Amino acid sequence: MLTRARIQLIKSLSDKAARLESGLFVVEGRKMVGEALASGANVESVYLSADVPEDILPVQSRVAPERVTAKEMERISHLRTPSDVLAVVAMPRGHATNALHRMGLTLCLDGVQDPGNLGTIIRIADWFGIGRVLCSPDSADCYNPKVVQATMGAIFRVTVWYVELEKVLADFAVQGGNIYGTFLEGDDMYGTELSQDGVIVMGSEGRGISPQVARMVNRKLFVPPFPVGRHGSESLNVAAATAVVCAEFRRRAR
Image (cartoon, rainbow, N blue to C red; front, top):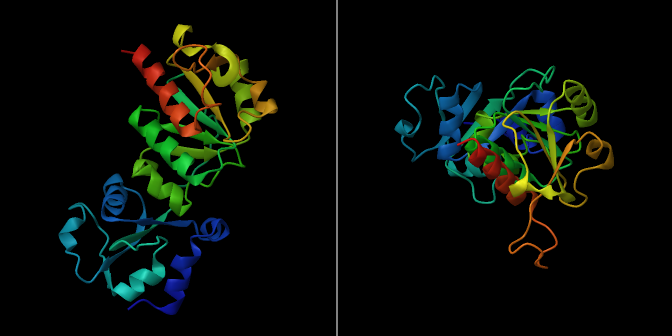
């Protein structure tokens, strides 16, 4: 049976301050918990509803699950409709020193504050083989339960760091790195040379890329509507735009 203190701890992990203090976050659902266990993440504990067979967990799992009642699962779940499997996972340790280098692509997110968008972008990065995502400090927390769920397990395969983007990008620019960003006044992405080594900067939902970060961008791109010049929606959702941009970069690599 779960103690009151344990229930309070797990419930508190919906709050960023509690996550930072404890170094823990919550993962829910059979697929997500299975991804966490299979990835080698530091899974602290796993909770199963009474009617769930243990063989739903990966064979390589070294964590002995604890059985909980439906009422207890409801109390510790961060979802509106509780799942039947929940895990508490330790955040990976490390920092972003020398995070940017001229090998492969890195996504940089400047003020992406919607948890669903951030989670989807991490999933997009995973799909297109981009293993690093750098976020400005005012971006959503990648261990927010809504973000974690939206990644569909990609959070365990993509490294996410929070950095002062302006400084990191300025250092990268000095190295001669390509820094791409999306702007309404940018060059048509489909007619522009794209490198497979560099940084792709995506801006916030409301204001786009901030002026201080925009100054670091040396390759401005525009995702044109179809047909070109057609007056329609003002802009794309940032997650949708990220998918379009990443798809074009990877198409060029084929």
